[in-house]
Image 1: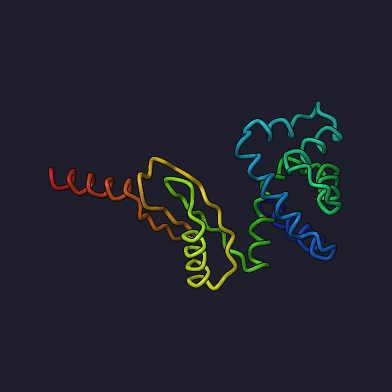
Image 2: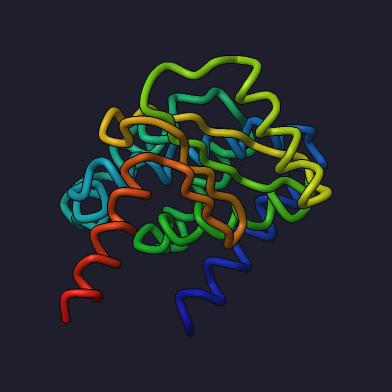
Amino acid sequence: MDIGIVSSRYARALLKYATEKCENAEVYKAMACLGQSFQEVPTLRDTLDDPVLADDAKLKLLETAAGSTQCDSLTRFFKLVLKNKRIGMVQFMAHSFIQKYRKQQNLIHSHLTLPSSPDKEITERLKALVKKQTDSNVEFVVEEDPSLIGGFVLEYDTYRYDASVKGQLQNIRKQLLQAGD
């Protein structure tokens, strides 16, 4: 069976169960943490796939990677995944769950990158702008990147707005290189 179909079915079942138990927001945070753990620790997937490692140890590892959340829905889900020998798909299940939760909550993920610490007023104005443009609730992640020099980069949905000095300098460089050809 296709890994995408299986992952989607498990994610849908988890979302339905967690929603019934009023734990869907907590499970969402844990799954986002789990997804981040898979990105930051590339060996996590190999470790979970290791047949020598006991299921109890894998369960503890999953709970730790998910932020050690004391959420009954998530613990039961992890036990089910282990029992059904689907541990190799848990990363895809986390990603699918995140997408389904965002759709259920009409939530859009937005990423703002600034060259220095963010000004609260500016971030709130940009968040309001994204909310108005998308007619959705906005999950706003702010990151610092000094290489931008000035300005900002705002990403949401499939859009990317680069108003940074670094981006403008790169555009000028491209134009100069094209003019030289």
